[in-house]
Amino acid sequence: MTPLPPKKPSIEPEEGANKPDIFEFMDYRQYLLARLEYLQTLDRKYSQRWVAKRAGIKSPQLLTMIIKGQRQLNRDLAAPIAAALKMDEREAGYFRLIVDLALTESDSSRQELLKKINALVKEDMFTSITPDGAVIFREWFYPAIREIVMLKDFRADPTWISERLQIEPKQAEDALKELLERGFLRDEDGSLTRTEPSVRTAKDKLYPMYLGAYHLKILNEAFRGVRHDRDKRHFEALTVSIPKALMPRIKQEIQKFFREIDTMCESEESREEVVQLHMSMFPLTIWNNMESSEK
Image (cartoon, rainbow, N blue to C red; front, side):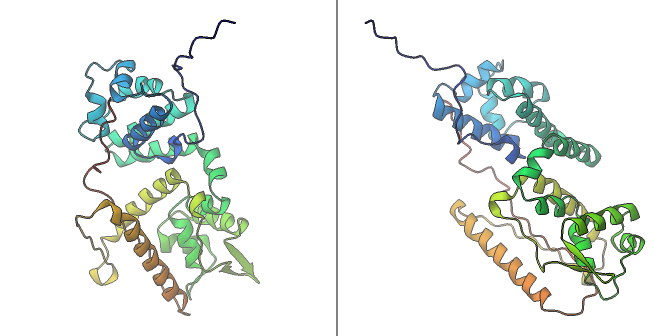
């Protein structure tokens, strides 16, 4: 019996469980690096040079420079790169959107792109995180309305809420209805109250894209907060160099700090204001592990 010839590497490698989920990325560079590293575990030919050639990029170094943040990805190259990396139609559509998001400087255009992203992955968002989490992070004012019911002068009137939060009465009305339906609030003889002191989503159910859109919205509210008198606000920033290995510990300390503040606030009976506390930590330099995987 004549032995079969050895099987040649497939042009389209069979993908496994460790495939990076593009819908968990908002940074197209991070996804490109993760996708390339994953494909190389299936077939070593998937170097940055090979993918660049398959995408019709004349300069073999261009893709490397894009991933390192030294060059921006041209919109015209997004589709051929998606094809070279074997993205399906839905993945390629999302990839083009996050490329556009990175290139867009207009706030209004960014909001429109976020709406398109939300529409594209809507089903995944509601199945990949808890329904409660999906609702509470839909708009910045959902958590605010959940907390505003604790104020001593609270009135369950959408107009009153809209005036306090500077949103539209219809937005306040819809948010109240949905928070009640989803169990974030409950009606006790005509008086609204929270069902639980705090709301958190399980770490494995947190959908990064969805939270990314939410964080952009609360950062926009922070711009409004700058207009308040200094005794009514606090902004602080620390720029420091760190070893990468320290990042998880810093994140744990930040989470511990938030839990302590939450506990402190919950111990108070009388409340007059709803505030938002958020702390940002992100790299100003490109992580040195974003090196070329070119062979």
